[in-house]
Amino acid sequence: MLELARTVRLAITACTPQDTAATTVTITGLHVKDRGDARPSDPGGRFKPGLAGAAALGLGAIGEFEVVCRGEPDRTGYLIDITTIDRAVRSVFPPLVRDALRAEALTGTPFDAGELLRSGATAIRALLPAPLAALTYRASPFRSIGLDWRPTLSSLIPAMPSSTPALTILTETFEFAASHRLHLPELTDAENLATFGKCNNPNGHGHNYRIEVGVAVGDDAPMSFDAIGAIVDAEIMRRFDHKHLNLDCPEFATINPSVENIARVCHGLLVAPIAARGGALHFVRVWETEKTSCRYPA
Image (tube, rainbow, N blue to C red; front, side, top):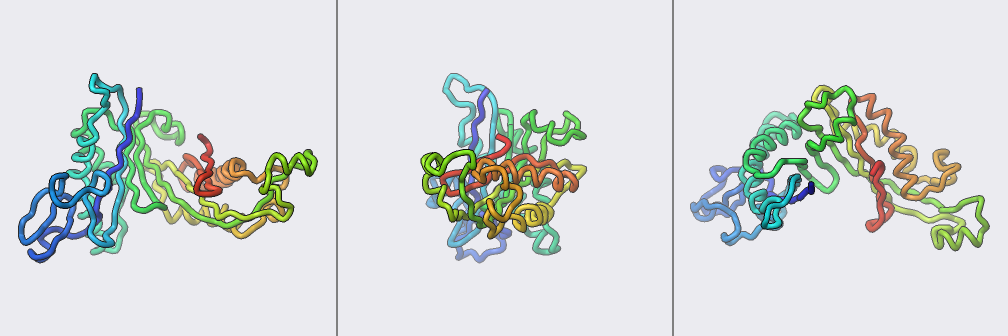
């Protein structure tokens, strides 16, 4: 059994071809309107896809849909032809997103991204020859919402019956600045320097940390991004932002503030408050630098 993941980027707009003048060129979901001639924007047209999706003009917003399929490859070596995934996403999601954005703009009420994904998943599943394992919509580098059908995830919310078709996973990324020193008191100064190098600087050194928090949510216990943000602010930002982790934070009084331990500590701080709001902490991932991060649990 293996998984194939495909990311499809689409121009996100609340417009339709009927909203624009015939002399303009507008990407709206699947169609380009140019001097009154509407035609598909698939490869072969003059607009090339940025990454298997419709191109956007200028500074138009881009959304990413990641489709994960599970199964065994056939004799071609393919589990599924990726162009099949591309066509499915392009045919299903542009009108769903367009209508949701229009309703949001008219009513001022945020649309239910989970419901949008569930509706889209039902339609996409009928278009794919391989089982759908996960579906994620990334509205920005900092927020995403996903559905996951992997069986192990049902254990995250004990009250959820095993027959539940998917868990909704809300993911948001935050940033905080802090300094730390990597040092073990049981080692000599020379041994600490040999082990940690510049990270053993007696006065410490700083990082701009990023923390990604993934929360599994049941349909009967919805949880918003605002709620996640408030919890992370109270439990992580106020505790660690602009602090010296070794000197100012009792959580690291006896453990070395490595990125691995920071991820574990942040996870421990978030589990109970998120559970109290009806969610289940799926994972915490902390970046120490752009090149180094740790996810807990793995």
